[in-house]
Length: 329
Image 1 (cartoon, rainbow, N blue to C red):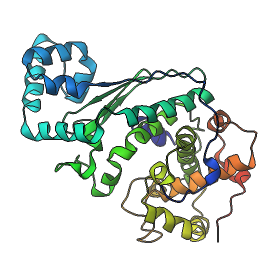
Image 2: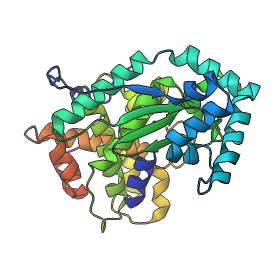
Image 3: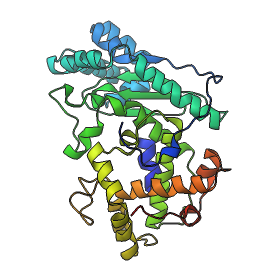
């Protein structure tokens, strides 16, 4: 479970697994201020050493993190400015920048998605303060830098097959490295701030419930997103999981997996091409999907509970038991 929260903090329209997770709360009266600062435009539109030096001066932490360079001395800064100038003048990276402009444009659609998510978070957590949003392009160095006050996201990680280059990740992860997952990826990461866990519970069930809470949180604050995006599944994968729900759940029951504490069972929630133990057609991260079903049924059976109530509930066994979950035949 501790690993789950670390993964979440580092973090991305067809049938819905559970239609009653669609939220109908009224957020019109909730005010948020969402602006997106385009740092990549700052350095690609004026590639002079003077402008890039100014950029580094004004964004030391961001520049050091995304361009992987220390900034302890004036000499460090001089070297970094040269490095950034070399990168932005590279035709390949300039091509990625130009593609990002075509794909994302002025990002009004992205801004509205962030606004939707932040309004919903503030509905459930009135003290929530929306962070600054910034974007950057570095040539796949780092994908994001997140804090409570500022979120910097690498646009180059969300261009999918629009470019001839790809981030250094496994092939099976690339389907989520595209624009539809841009805001979802950040909102899923935000969930870790609110999920409370029992650090002593190292069962697979606790891990599944933890992921289920993260996915349910994301669905509640981004109700307009389809479950294919929430779960990171294709339409075919999701329909296949739903069609074989009983078979998938029985695999966990027959193998006595739910209360098992072996770290080998993390394969059911970790990234993989597919869940080989169940079958080559079984989607990856199937334990997260089941956890999402458990949590959704738990909330359905306890309608007086709020989203914060769910996030604060540390007893995974209680959530599973009170969900009264039964797979569809």
